[in-house]
Length: 455
Image (cartoon, rainbow, N blue to C red; front, side, top):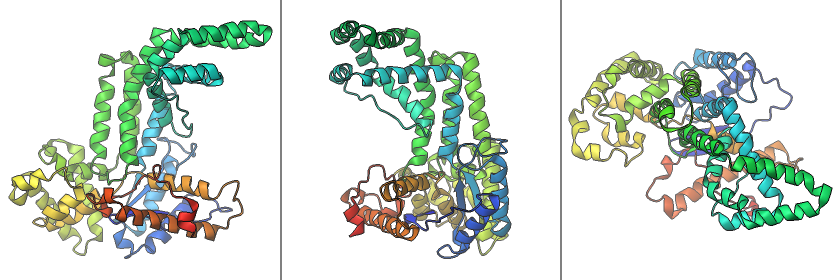
């Protein structure tokens, strides 16, 4: 289990669940035990993020909880700790949206053709060497575990467009064909595949739709990057989903995607957003100082989400209902830019500080609203930290060290995370951004040798 707070990302426990039935009862029991033993007590826990499946699904699909299991888990947690909100991982939700898009026939076809081009070029060293000479980009192999990589594949093919076309119209490709002809029957299969790939490369419709696919999935990829990032992002989720929907609605105006197909994609987006949306996202949007001048009183779901979130989170406040009512009154002061919120110096710092730090610095005049805003805006909306943990765990305990005991793995992970936190404090590039803003830091770019944390 990974714990995220304003102090950063830390490793809590590696639980060996082998031999146990992973049903809803198991998840509820495990979660309640961890919440009960949380540092500072359960009242310091406000948010639990889980992976969720397809709306209406009764069984698990690939990974994550089914719809029914998620609802049961949320109910089980809130019966004991009513101030804790349970939300779906937004990165996982975007990945499921991409899965739905790339199951559409046109998108599946353009993805398969692009992979066919890549595989053909990489199969023959002479063609690959010529491609590398022609292109500053690399034909990247992406993992197939996330549909995000399907979108990145279309982007990669688009980047390499000119080099690929030049390769198949160049002298190196013609010389390669001559060599295959000389091989006789052994070269016939290669020549047949080259003819099929050449037909794809010279098909203008393919390149046009590949570009359209990239434009369609680009805002979704941006959303995934936001969720996978290292900063608290609860205040940006609702706006990102809204902007994604606007871009999808404009697809027929700017791409080769037909209005009917754009409508199908829009319906996928609406289904996924309505399923993944939580009142916490609306509250984060309402309390985000970047949107302080947006007139939110005309957006019903935002105000309803804010009120519901306040009602839930203030159950952990010593004054309870009184604090909740005071916070709602103070919100009007914030939105009207009265007092300190109307000062030019206060508004000039919007965007220069993390949202929750802005509230720490300028929200003292509305203490109840400040109490809630700091806790909401310091939250992350995805379980990406746990996904990175799984990757590191697979590196530590794999085929070469498959007999490593669970307690040893847990100690190694604890030291690893502790060293990451220490490096973040000492690294000069983090001096301008305090360590407690680094929530969910990506470990993809962090390379630590075995000796660095086992000595």
